[in-house]
Length: 233
Image 1 (cartoon, rainbow, N blue to C red):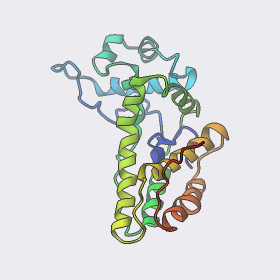
Image 2: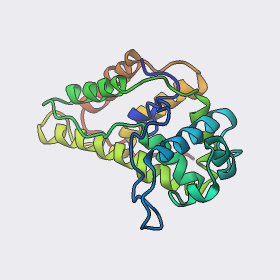
Image 3: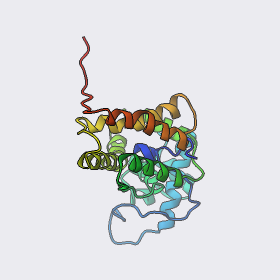
Image 4: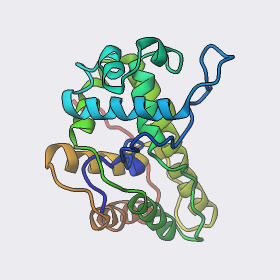
């Protein structure tokens, strides 16, 4: 089951988040920011876990590098040797719990979308509280550093995967060209986040399948999709 804190697998922000208990699951991109000394990967994991735990408890706005360092039993210098600040650390912490995502190629659009949903279901563990997503959602519009890191490392890779799935479907003659791929791709995370943040309900495989079968496929199979924004008067 895809629970409240695990939504980024399908959104770009829907990330199955499982506290690693100190076990390193991923090295920080770029390694030691200052070069030279080898950095302890288990320390990286502890800092990421502390960042996610505090994010769930107090939200992004109140989260500080000092608080993360204290919670992890480390110094601020330890954090700044690895990350530029809390925005990069938080995004890296989320990303460290997300499996590498590649576009499936099952031979059909329906099969590809279902495979993405299954992957999201398969990579869930014990999720963090939905307050992680609530805190991020409120901070993203106001924090340019967080937004830039979030879009570059979480949103854009997922957008590319979904765009590839649609492009392959067009190449197979399965659907007509989608004039506004970004808007179609954004429907899944929009519906997921609305259910999570507004309705405060769990995100389970059945719900994801209902989006695929009831919204995405009928939309793109109906014919050419322009979905251009229409000015209001």
